[in-house]
Image: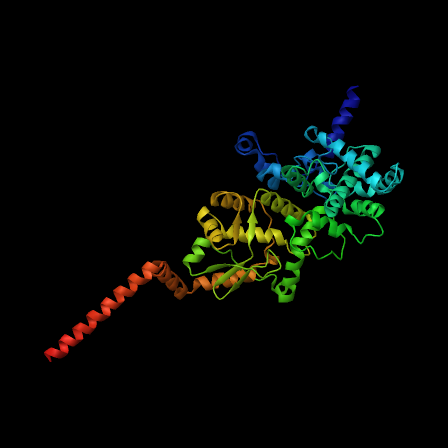
Length: 455
């Protein structure tokens, strides 16, 4: 026994390195850690053994993501459905279960419209896409095969039927759309980044149930349903889209991308630039603001002859949610293109720091305020800019920013702005200045005449 123990210890001694090992990766100790626990823990990516396998970090193993911690914490409710769960992430939540019967009734309407009595061919079609659909989500989905296929069919048929009812003008018969409030909530839920079905599922169901005598396609039907959120409904994507949110995103950005390309702005990528000041400071420096009425894109902002021309933006209850989910989508999509919506939000984030800044843009017709007051607008726009990852080399407005900053550096523009503000800001000021100037001239003339008479 003692011999075996001796051999074990001798082997351990022999295995020691000739030089003592000194570790250099430690856990942060208690007192430091308690000051700010989150400062020492990863939010997205686990490296090494200390945080390996944590449930909130497992999604990175497949490199496909949901809305991450920093973005989510800014406004949790902006990413979660209020009424209708689509896809697996919010499937089965107790506050959303009441809509399961609504989904079943929409499937019944789909079959009735097609004069079909069985779901067999639709179930078979969804089963063929089940594995591909699962791989579209960031996390491992706990639903069994049958439950997952059921979800695909129920959710997909509900979306297709909603689009068709709206296109046919029969949506007013839908119990949800009889009340405007619920209809708006439903649209909101269908645009959430985490509340999506892959678009190839919707394309298949649409094609399987489409009337060959009607010239319709899933793209135009989707954009018609979201008319209040879209800006370029005439364009149909020439490439695959990821989901409903992705298609609406294309309608926001496609014309602006084409405009940038035609102007050669993409050739300016990588140029150095600095953020511009808020609208109050810019006005002090002689910059004017003007509503652009001829632009085909919400994001087509220009700077010409000392004037920033901005297409009008309506800000209402759904604006923040739409922007947040577009930004979340951009954070995880292919970085070969600029993050158009993120850059647009950052532009307004620069212009609006206070309610006074929002008031200036509201007065010029650039912001159409449906929130009730300028403070609510400034608060929303400021929060939208938090925790955004911005690629400086592809910023869409780098040229505009540089031109504005260059204009502000010229002193004569500042002097002229102060002159206009202090002496020409109202008709009475102009009249008073004219009167004082006239009086001064008359006094000078009188003095000259007196001198001449004496001579």
